[in-house]
Length: 558
Image (cartoon, rainbow, N blue to C red; front, side, top):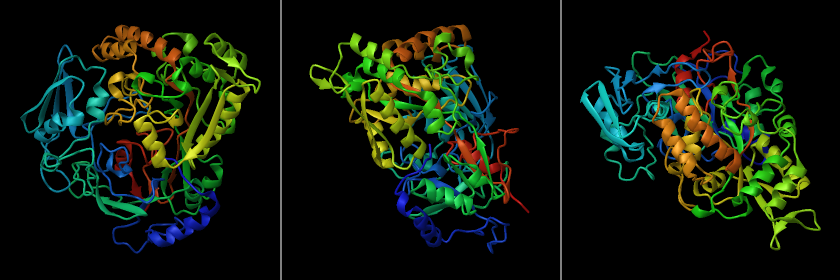
């Protein structure tokens, strides 16, 4: 998720200096397309708070630049997470399962080329699935019987795993990646993909992509150049939006009218992704701290005043979260126990105390709980400049204190946050969970809760997986395997019921809200954006896969 980073005091001055230094294309006011550029008006996008920018388009890297995922690299099919729709063909034309779900046969589009002019064929697709980080889920073989047919064979049925296989596996050119010695360190500075854009240049302050002249039958994009600008501050980005110096970004703005009142920028809010407290929960995998005790996590969960957090930190733009991690109301049918439909909205300090006392904790004279002379003292970090998350963390610290739990909230730079969650060297983190692109919470359960998706503290989680809590529960693991292997809704509901009982009790991620996802875009100079009436794609500029899909729909206003 793109948010924002640092140093409020000098933000406006830095913003102005940055714009002058970058020499941004197009007119500063956003009024028209006559920029003096024969290729037309450059679309300017917030690249996020990772500054200085470093050229890294490796889709397996946790610090990959946003334009890599969708604009440059593509999966076989596009799944729209804002709707329960059938997937749209991208590189794949169609697919079908065999009767027991262990074989997927994909028909690929003919005539597709990589952006270096080489043909994309089923051999590339087979190579991609056989490539080390993608060779998973019991894959037996990936074969290409001809140039447009891919056959994937698995040990177990993969019905429920469809989205991950077909919608999140980035196709790789064999003639490039077969020469990569170590995918974990490869920065892929000149990426060869099939997407609508090609990387042009990268500087410390920005990077640009240009339309891919080899793009397939959808046609070369109408927007010929896109500039991704690194801005290390929320207020700076907001100022640039208001001034017409940015055209597209996903960010939290507590007073969106201040941005949209200029008649240039419009805003769309699409709450989709859970905001949670990551807890490094598993002492067996090396987590340390009071949060490894489930009683402490349970007490903190009931001590939180979600209603106040929603109003004060997120100005009422968020949705209610379910501790089952089913997105409501879309995924209502998957919630097994109505009591677990929504996390408690009001705090209950007395209940928190009862949980702790039952676990052997006692309250000291200072009003805080501890055990064996050691107080419960927790460190909660959030990224400096993620203003909504920073505010929420402060509120949680105050609310926890009311229940006798000491939580120290502090901010860190983005890279420190990323390193901490990747390696498990933290206690609590304010962070986001990637919501599913289909009306089924399976992908969250598999990627964020299953033991196969994590690693020992000190080691990074597997590429493409997100179990930062180091949670590893055999009941959950079995339920995930059962759900992955069935196309029967009743069997899946039974598996989810068992799984939900475990995660609602264990709380490796403490649910807070369904986060506001505000997208701001220039509707004066560009058309074709998603709207409330036509949410053809998840709209923020940082949306994986979706951002490239949106770019294909945009046109300059004539």
